[in-house]
Length: 341
Image (cartoon, rainbow, N blue to C red; front, side, top):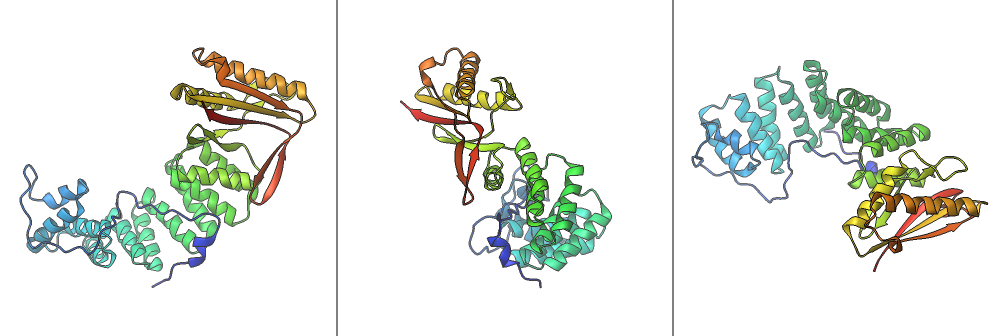
């Protein structure tokens, strides 16, 4: 059995491997009941029905009865394994998942979940073999492609992992885990420019949740502030940086979307005030013009927002930001500071 790469836990970002369609529940020792009570409205395969309702302990109890009657039924073995996997009984789960895959070797899903069972028991070589078997049966099996990428990541095979995540994104261009881990793989190969593009691509799709904040942190620590986090009242919010056309106060890029986010925060909390701080190195008049343009844009979006709730400051010096142990000077930037009345 292969051992986990413990060093992975200390690098860059902890790789989150969320098992799709399985809830790993924090329960103690699971004892399978001897019998299965009839469930109103379900077929004789009520163990499978209970699994589909995420009632994993009840499902396992019923599937014990099903398997007594039909021990060679691949579906009963499969769902028994899935139920036990959800209940954190990895070794027991693997036995059933292996049997299901053996009974129906042409089923790509069964091969994939057998691989997940090996992952849960930390046998990464067998895990990888199962994903490869699934992909021989169905080369576009999204989960097998994704988890094969995870397997390569765990082993430090960054280029192979990257190829798998690219494969996932050809199947589903918006798949969040592949977008995120693609950036991690590029970072690990020290492909900084490509990694920055990948982090920004992730944030173009997703701007909430732990992964999004980690993506912003990675960008900022490498001196890229195209996305930043701001406290809008009590909520930490990710926004693209506000950008102006060169030498003017005309908004460009995703700036309007950021201002709409600010407007939304003011609408939701009437006690909130917004302080907009604009920096333009060596040009105080430009900084002032941009500050006034931002305030006008926000107030035009919602005339009900009082002008007194949007305060302005402008400076002809760079904004200094500390990130990743370094201090960066942004020649032109906008910061948003909120306060409650």
